Length: 272
Image (cartoon, rainbow, N blue to C red; front, side, top):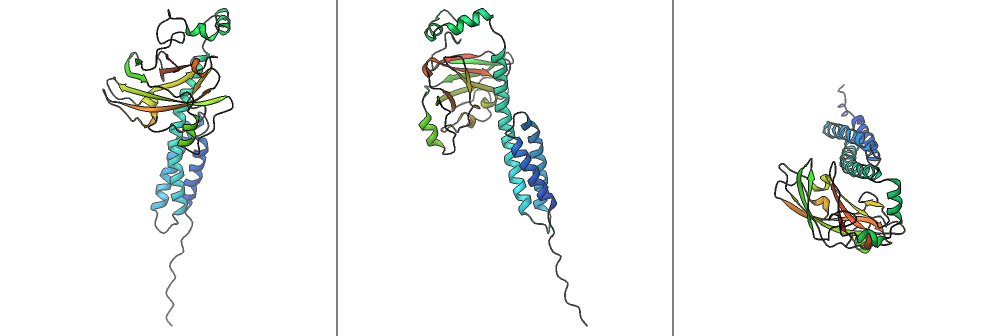
């Protein structure tokens, strides 16, 4: 008696796909945690490898592997971007925390009115006491050698409406703050290559002396953004916008700062 044809083997679960999804999800969450995002980047790479293997296996479900691969790729990108942002903010905070003057000098500076700080024309141009005018081109060094020529364009100190219109998912500025928009033009003058949004730190120092950076409140700047400027070779340049949430009070009495990410002097520009 002939036997009926054997049914094709049923597809079993794809354990690698599930593993890729789990690892990618953990890496995605870790990307938002300062310093943990260094480890999450490694986990994201593991998730990508597992996801690729999972989606290429024959006779295995693909959905979990594809989802794990997508989540892991997103987690890797976030880990790199946020690790750089958090590191820049940490370095800036440490630099600001280092003692610069004696206790007596600090108390005198805090007690001085804003106009007195701005009126010290005897100080070097580019200091907080005598910030450079907007439109001034300055040389920023890296490792002791010239790296970039930087020029700040005319800022919009209250760009809250522009930021809200750019992206519906942009966070609202905290109470007492407003978004400020700053166009930044850079030219790479080093000998190898440079990526401006990695190499340079741009901040705003309020009239009260508090420092504010792009990583304080995450918001997409109107295009083109500073992060849109890719790797530059000698002589190449570009322009991009930076958005920072700054205190509303005495906004015009603050100052913009530009400095290399590591080991360099801070250069101050007038708020507007």
